[in-house]
Image (cartoon, rainbow, N blue to C red):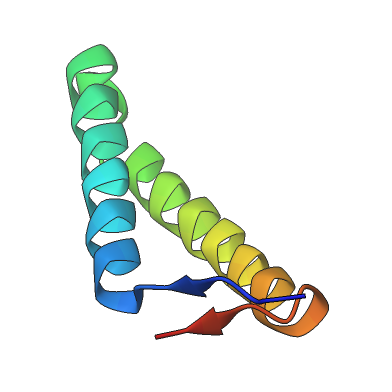
Length: 65
């Protein structure tokens, strides 16, 4: 079975764009609740990305190239 190789720089850029879009939409939708919701979004996104990266590399054996 061959393993897929993922491009780490491309993945980081795409995740940063998704997080930026989430923060912008939060800013537009709830301007009165800033910066609390922004902090929550950043923390949740970091935890989700960390768990996802751990799962992809340790559990599934995926390689970053």
